[in-house]
Length: 201
Image (tube, rainbow, N blue to C red):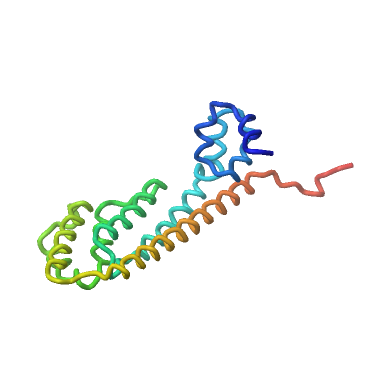
């Protein structure tokens, strides 16, 4: 069946929703009559049950715990990575406060920030410090480092960014796989179980 023929059989009210769905999933939900039915099907399959959300939270929590700043990573890049993961955790029901993110960043900075971390902890109330405030403070000190003659090699930075992009894509694929697997387990658990002994002639 061609894409054109497939699309012609889909109610127009579903068009917008289908635009965000990949081909494999699209073909599985063609029998849904309206946008609401499609949405309910997707919620049940990928994000509408506790098992799926728990699997996603667990994957993201592991990723969050393993985060560390790379030696040639900028403050903005690293804080952006930590914030992205924490936002994903929140969107899947995790109760993660700014204080946890601030403490995570402070614990996992590179060695050149050691005395800056001590200064921040002594002069600020970490429990009241926002992520944006911490990021601005660290970025200011980072600029001072660079003015003092500490420079990054362009080729090294480009290689690191390429490696980071690849690693993030792999981590995203791993999380997606775990979520889909959890959804399939949930779907299988809702199917009726047939016992051969219960079938009579």
